[in-house]
Length: 427
Image (cartoon, rainbow, N blue to C red; front, side):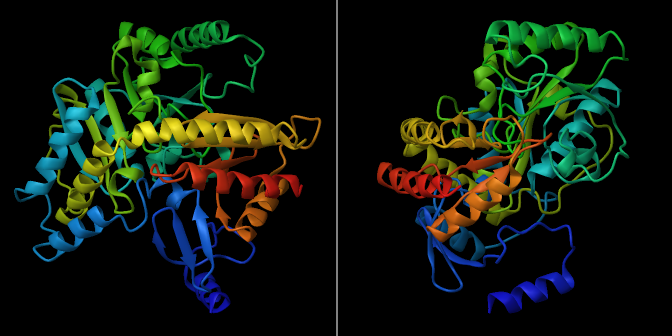
């Protein structure tokens, strides 16, 4: 059945639509932190549909909210008042940390980043954007234009002029040998120098932890230091929280809060986990920025009632059950367990991350040379052992990505770590 579906997939869908595994997997249903495939095999899910099933599969509170809302009305567009959209926007604005916040809902993180770029360039009257090397911001034309990861950038054409900044990757590149303080100082000096060679950019867009890039991040405080330089020139800071938001990093509710010394971002984008699988993205910005557009706009599917009901139920569950705290506690245990394993596996260069957002970088033993074939082998072996994980990396790196739902239990973390240990040792 799966081979037949794979054949049909290849006959009608694009060749560039990536699939995991030599024998692609069809997931048919899930519950909690587990999913099942069409052959009845059960897996512990440590990737959550690319960090999207944030709380749990088939979470009763969310499925009930979706079902009840679908029984009333599913959709009406933003041309009409929409109570679930207003209620979720109020909650998001409240937890955003941005003063006088306004919220605009989209259907994806790509669309959210696209909107943020529109707001920033319109507000600043500049089409120059600063972005981080090794970054990923989506698959639309403008988002690809600011993505600093060659593997996910199929064209050099763009409506934007993009300048790439050092700092998103701590352990590679020209400043990797420096300590954290000197690393930050060097990146700030580089930013100041870059700004001396260009017209004033509209904004810097940055992921606090780079997702597709392999869960890499700078030392805490880098973007706070950047913000001081940007603020002097009126340049906006866009925090791409599509993967880091809602408490996934454990230490903070938003990833930018590890860099909050100089105040919150001007714009925050979000998506993925807030809908627990439903298609929700969005932008949070100060009113003066959000309201800068001088033409009409709507969102046909952004803010649709059934997705808003799901997001509101999911956010309420997350806050009431302190899933951020759970990500910090269980994620900390999982990180240390994986570091202990990695110390005995020559292919592992680094285990990094925070909360339930953990990257395992693989190289050829004794070198800094990426080992994508090893990453693929571990992915397959983990699946064979009953565990689903992700992979990523950029600029000659390869990494495994571990990002379970935030309700992960200690027992499940230990089970997943044991499977991953066997998969790593199989190398």
